[in-house]
Image (spheres, rainbow, N blue to C red):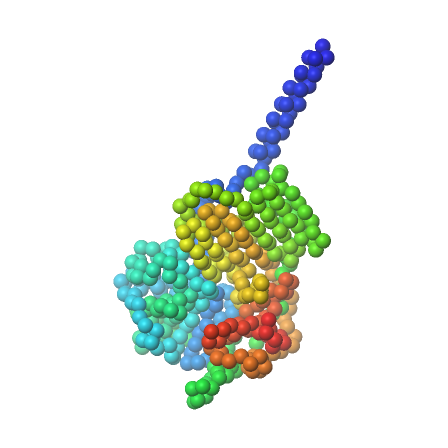
Length: 417
């Protein structure tokens, strides 16, 4: 009798164990970035291709557009004009830099670190318009220049190669040259007759806002991210560090979440099988990962891409009135950097941004011309305002580009960051 009872108890225990195992494995989303996932729509990709900044040059009077809405509007009209040009069969030609006259009225559309032509055409639905095929698919588009005047042109460049197309209708850009924007930074760049003299920057006064990042406001965000990222949440270990950050690992993947919103991720998965993973598909993987971190992809845009074959690195920034920079290992970087290898998210460093306005800076900005002289910076070609994230606040800074160098100068105290 006792043996029968033991047998029944044993059967019940085994059955319960099997049931619990089944429940455990089916109650959590069993997904991996290595597995096939739904592909984001072309609308998602379209929304992430946009300029980092736009600057209008009206005969050496510069206007740095600082409203994200204005940038969106100018960009939409630029793409519309480009499509109209391509539809009319206007030719695109590669030319030497020496043959381009970059004087007079110009509109500079800065594409950050640059995006490759294939992403540019795919995202903007320009693949079928053959003239752009004259640009190599892996060539970078770092800047688009609109030249306004008697012979208007649109120029694509990576600063080594230049592709030029005549503009059939430049009326919209003609109006931009003289437009007064509610939110812009205006400055005049003057050079003395001596060819060796330094450029002098005279800046118009303007009000500058103060912005703070909330980071992770509560622990529920941690749980949401870990459930989205890991294949099987039941095997994930949580480690709380003394600084308030959390580490999560399943033995293959690692995720570290800092209180200020910094996210670090790695995946040690190895495979001997090489997937046929295109650049666009790898970009889709990166976008899916961004979504899983709780970031709306409509709030970010791509600023750079590098790599080939099945190994790619993508950089993203947040849509904001000014470009946002972070400093990593002493280098200027983007808030979002993601590496994709063979269809797997291998590494990621992401600054989770939940920004709120905290009023305006009361004191005047440090004189930028004095800061350039104080820091003995030579050969200045251009400057624009950016915000540098210091872990809590977004600090206004001047991004000063020189011949062969670049500096970030704190706009409040004039010191190099």
